[in-house]
Length: 267
Image (cartoon, rainbow, N blue to C red; front, side, top):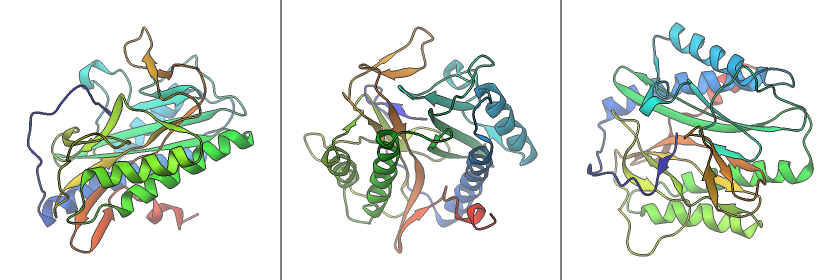
């Protein structure tokens, strides 16, 4: 779940110990498993409510608490955002997926007192080439951003990696919503914009855990919020994609806590 850039975090950046990072690995691996399972069931005809129920049931089996349900009044476990919806879409019994849609799925848990958070955007059946490029560019921008999680770098190095790749491919990055630190709270300092801001940004130090989440639009970067108070859509109604990983900064480089590799190899 993304943090609004206008909602500045008062808390200072909290570095985690190796033990805390191991707890966060456990939390994020539950998130990774849920997203892996959902990837396998997304198809035309399924409702976003059914996806939410699958996520909640698996979460309960893993003895984890869905992080988003009830957060500031959010009604679902998943944020499920279709096509021009950027983030924070609400699960609904009435919303059925259709062939050619793209679906962004954002999910988080709290486990043993620590949070995990990750997101993917999935094609529903065959999609047109422009949508396919949007997904590829957005996911690649996340991978390039993760490479910048090096001790001594700045948060702005992450932002720059996303912005340059996205804009170099003709798309735009959302500016109103940003990534964030994560730990014993879902949203911690620092904020992680997907574009370079004026002024200096915090240095990356060992133990920082960052939820990096490029939100990329086909058209304008401008967005608006629907009357439900949650669902964010693109101002021009063109499609948007969203990918996210929770990443720890270590002396050995970035550690992707929400990696789905452990599940993908079981295919």
